[in-house]
Length: 387
Image (cartoon, rainbow, N blue to C red; front, side, top):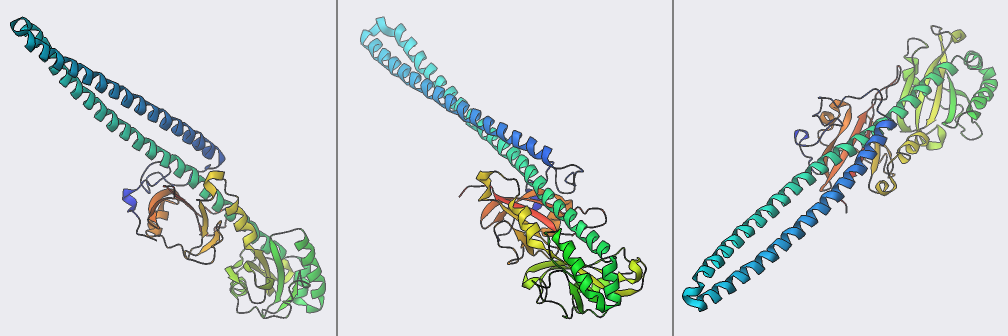
């Protein structure tokens, strides 16, 4: 990507203020604001049409004035010639003819001045319309970016609740204590999975990290594999109570979910299912990330005419693109200059050069929900110029 314009030099902020001066997330940024901005955008398009029509009419009027002025000047020249032929008798008429020439000159100057001032005012008006249009579009897109990341935070908060709750299930507690009961635990996990479409699998490990049961053994034969070195197992076993959970970010596991890209939420299975019970094992829920993220970015409510030129992204805390409506997720880093400065105001928009074209970049950072926040970022990119 090319070097962007400096943040201080661009339109940056859904309220029209500089970063940190009013761009903070609102408590209710959703659909109403988006509908309002769409109405304003339609009004601006109408204003542009009226402005163009006024400009054409004024130029036509100035053209007619110039044509009349030319005819007047020719007439005055002819009058001067005839006055000269008339000699002394034509002197008075010659004075009138000269005044007609002078009047014609002043008329030409006034017409030219009117044309120049009108063109200047029309340019200023169009620049104001463009600026307001960018503000309206930036507001709408930053609202949509916020909606996307908010949906993800809320959805993944539920995943953290699920794993903590299911880790207290009696079948999991019994199987972690007595592996002979693992068959019943696996069937129980299968029943849970039948009610959800967002999980590939649920796995139960003993305290050493070996999987002793999973809910989809016929599909994912991961039983007996060692998970002790995984981030999700280690983070769960480091928790201090059942109120906490473990997590491993987006990755491709060699043993879980057939190699699909997953997020894994985890919780320690404790004696008696109690929050402070002794460690017995670990429960991991294997989340289908693409089913959530790609659905959200593909369903972002931009107009049909905008879809082909709009890129919708979710970017993690390491600037890795983890969801992309153009299908390039997990293939690149979002190399945006002034990344941290831009996101300091949590929600807003800016104009930057990308691939030698000015783009409107709307963004929103993870707002968090209840006790959970991904720490990720949502972006929507649109070129300001057509191809």
